[in-house]
Image (cartoon, rainbow, N blue to C red; front, side):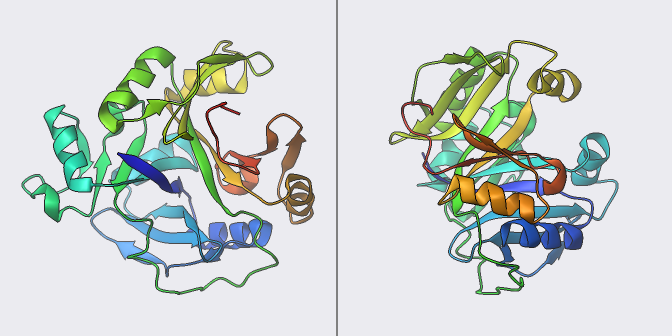
Amino acid sequence: MITDISYVSVAVRNIDTAIKDFNRIYGLQEVTPITYSRSFGWLRVILGNGPEAFLELLQPTDEKLPLARFVERNGESIYLFSFKVDDLAATVRHLRARNVRFASWPEGARPERIRSVWIHPRATTGIYVELTEHLLENELSGFGGGNLSGETLLRELSYLAAVVPEIESAARLYQDILGLEITGPRNTEATHKFDRVVLGAGGRGFLELMQPNDSSTPMGRFLASRGPGPYMACFLTEDVDRTVQLINQRGGNATRDPQYGAWLHPKPNHGLFMQLSTDYLGRSGG
């Protein structure tokens, strides 16, 4: 069902400031113009490295609508995970048969007429999940509006990660509604004190589920204060050491980790907690 990751969406307070920061630190450019949606109550732009567009920024414009309430409650943070599926109409029928709650789509529309669908976070583990058949090709117009501050440091998305209170039931849920497979056995990360399992397809991991084992860790505090939900995005880069050095020189906050690549603090990234890697997440879960 799921064949790739389309993008990760970040709710920000000021879209112009966020664009400048992601451009300055990572060299990301605008691959679409900023658009306004009255019905959703947001300003929207897609950033990427040109060939790959993988970061959506959303600024709320209507305090009565969900995005504004989300920012008021959580601050700037990851808002949505978007995945590409091979057959959206079949996926919609599959989800409807399981009475999955949708967040946004025409209730009476035929599945064949739907371009994308949002699954409500109450039907997942606190995550807005978007499913689409395209990797933004229909939106990208060669806009290239960003002025690159230097080389682009990020190639594309490797995988997305979420915090859950109970990993076994969460894994079964995503297997059932999204057709994902467990690509590696559940294991415990002793240093950071959490259990993890990776789900994906075709040997590649798309979604990591993490269950904290200690309420005093950052992940444990996240779960206690915000509940289950999106936690992190892992991006691919050519050379982790060089990328860490350049990110810090440009005003970011990157820490090298010999085991996991590197960690990027969410504060300079408008609430987006990031990991760097040189390869996709495979069957080994590493």
